[in-house]
Image 1: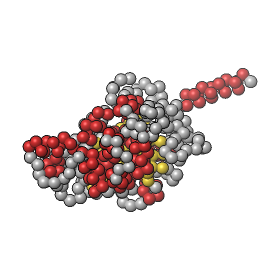
Image 2 (image 1 turned 90 degrees about the horizontal axis):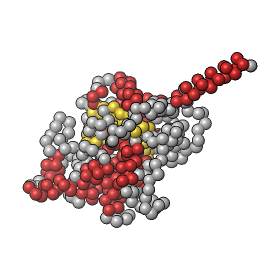
Image 3 (image 1 turned 90 degrees about the vertical axis):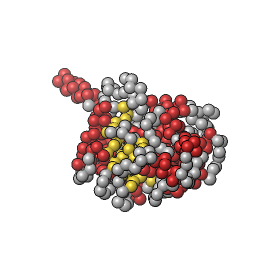
Length: 372
């Protein structure tokens, strides 16, 4: 009996030692919409409480952003995923990709952990800028006390259908500008300042170094838009829309958490970017959806040109795990399937492993304050 008791005690201690490497249970709690059995949902104070249309103070948005904890150990894992993914995409260099992974589901209901590879490097945004424009448009409507505006149909078309013309009308609405002939002197400076309204808004929330002030052009930009773009570079222009992988993932998280502009605005954006997984898997630019198992749900925005393919997605796996994944790539020859490879690796890991890499929270830091 004593020997049996000792053996049972050793097994119990062993189970505690590996408790952080928990396998997902075969039967998890039921999930609905984009809710998770383990997802962290910050309480965002609005006034009046319970009003979905009530403005969310910028201080609350900043607080939710500061709750995100950067994990160097998780970043190490992200780099390993990048090595595996790029190895399956011949000719794609690690220097030409950026990946951010925001783990929202935590077994202890703790705040999200952020890991990234080159996630702080600004890269050409393509249609990812439309997510920023959507938030800015709802913020502008809120500031002007505009309800049920016709611009909302353009916001939906911009997000759901990747409609460039609708997006350009949204940009005009936000900035109070329009495209046209070349401007000079003070007229151009006034035009540029108005177009930079979105930049100033996001910088006030803590998004540093982004540039979201350009329209979307299938053909040549108008003369004044070309002025704003600046000098031509190898792939884009010096003032092209640029964001980081981390910024894209963080903004999508704020929308998921109903923590920016208003709950109503966040709900409308989420409805516009919700995708059917089977449809998303069709076509040459399959992206993150193609790496997900059946039964997953995805809310995503993607953009591409002949030299880049970007996507940011909120993913809910069949086991209830929720995370945001942002993948930005650039290339010189043809479209690669890098984002699909990364998505498959991340989804597989999340389906069999729910624990934190940083067991004792010893290495967690705030990406913005740098404090332990």
